[in-house]
Length: 260
Image (tube, rainbow, N blue to C red; front, side, top):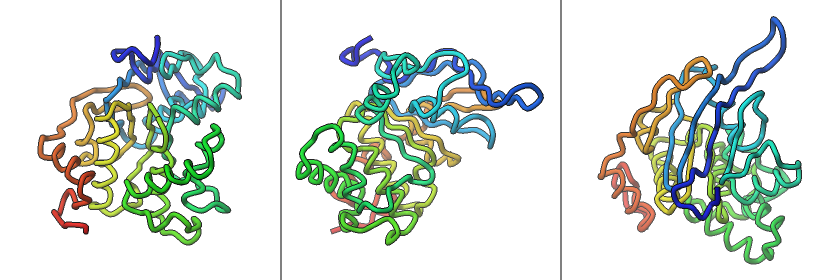
């Protein structure tokens, strides 16, 4: 498969199983999961604690390897890549939002965000411009030269999201991306993720919030390491227009507050 094929999935998990431990300590985190995410599609993953949500995300992002089955990103089987080629693919094609942010303490917000681009050979000034643009998209341009220790948890989370969105990331994976945010800010972040999918990227988000899952096109419910049910998202036309309005003007998507 080629990423130029608009019908090909950006992400495919084929009969993926993940087992931790051995013998009496063996735990089946995932059991034969089949899941595809296509260009322009926003998938929310829900389920009780221990159902396999975070394991699913780490396997999709190439941060872990399945015990059985195969993970493919843009048609490339991650299990067949060398460590260097896997790192290159993850840096260029996959944006990952971690629950604990994973920002580098010694780097400013702009430096954290631009680092992946500079590693890909993008000149420093251009990489910084892209980083600042990503911060502006999340409404936190003023944090560009601030270090992580000088930010709140919510600010760090938005910086981590900006880092995941910089460049031509075809797949965005987010583990509870609104966990440290108030409801209005969380909605604005979801509007940005939704818009990125509407522009052609694929996204998969783990969330416990049904209201946040409503932004998705499809909701996958996990239970005991298996997909229990799948349903269509309940994103309304009003939410679509709210996302478009937020990105165009910065107006709050829920309260209608105008940011000027």
